[in-house]
Length: 161
Ligand SMILES: [Zn+2]
Image (cartoon, rainbow, N blue to C red):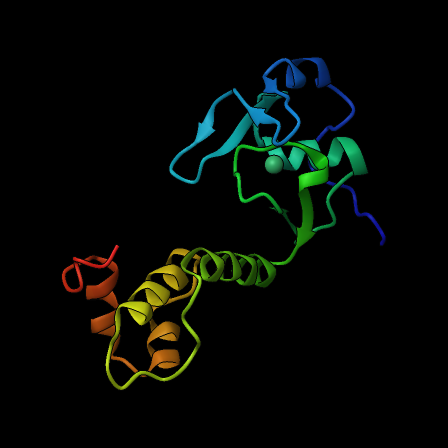
């Protein structure tokens, strides 16, 4: 893979960086400023804020190729352990998020639902939380976009967690 020059000066500031990381056998958790509400760590270097997990990936591998995201295998946004991180596209990120949501709810086959069920409601909320547009979700499940919005904002199906 050809690396393009990134915008992160990845060869400086490592002591500062690792001083804010709590290492363990599992995730290495960033203790510095979090970015709310996503929970990703933020690290200020040379007056610029960077995502801590992106910086950690660059420390290990060099600059991130342009246009790619650094994703978490462990689903812990604050984790900066290089072995828990991998490169992907925005679509990979959406797919990964959806997969994790499916595992979490442990059900929810994809199908067009003429009638809403609790599983479909959970799947719809998960897809939107993963960054899919309400319109594309409404098409996917064959429900009106207004219904998707009401589900997401818990105006309807409030009892489904
Ligand atoms: Zn981790």
